[in-house]
Amino acid sequence: MLCTGIMFNYTLKTFHLMVSITL
Image (cartoon, rainbow, N blue to C red; front, side, top):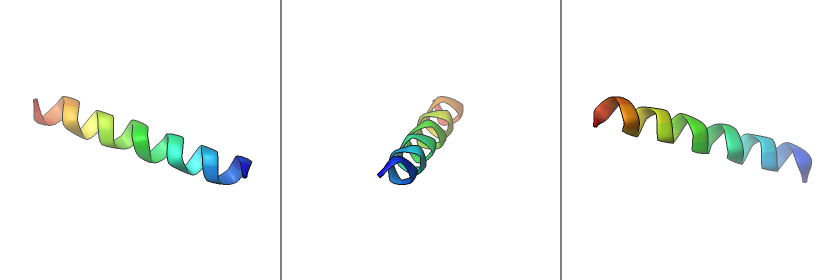
């Protein structure tokens, strides 16, 4: 459960970072 949460959080941060760079 915790592992999945960390992975989801990491993916979300990476996606947000990519969007920020794109914009």
